[in-house]
Length: 169
Picture 1 (cartoon, rainbow, N blue to C red):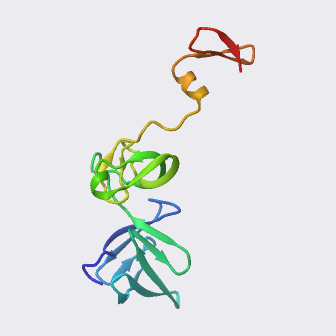
Picture 2 (tube, rainbow, N blue to C red):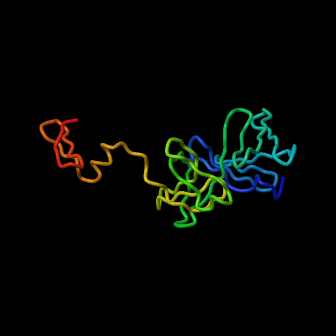
Picture 3 (cartoon, rainbow, N blue to C red):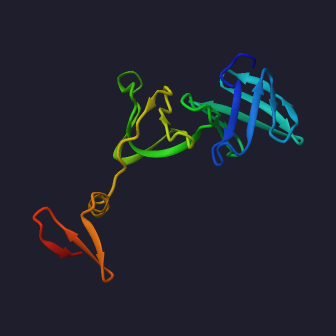
């Protein structure tokens, strides 16, 4: 398995960054401190024996999917601030290298990408290009509040529309 796509640090998709597992050569170095040997089955599949039970893992894109349902994603460091990235669902973004990789999320859909909680940077899940997340989808009310066109008065929300008239929602 040495030199394959399995090499490197991995984290569990359900709790990114909480536990890191390292694959070096034909061994997994587990977060808990023990090691297991990997038996290469194909270019994208291997097996291990863990606590007397044989488990297999298969590479699907950048995800390592285990036969017990666990999913690992590569652990990456932010190229902007060198902190750990998390696998995150985001809406409304387009990769800066869209012409090359084709990855994006429209306004009404969610797609996964890498996110840095340290500098708030977002990175394409396919090619790892840095991109700026588009303005989040917000309701007209949220947008009006953001622009200072909404005021609270006697537990009623008043909206000042574009005509200058005050109306109650």
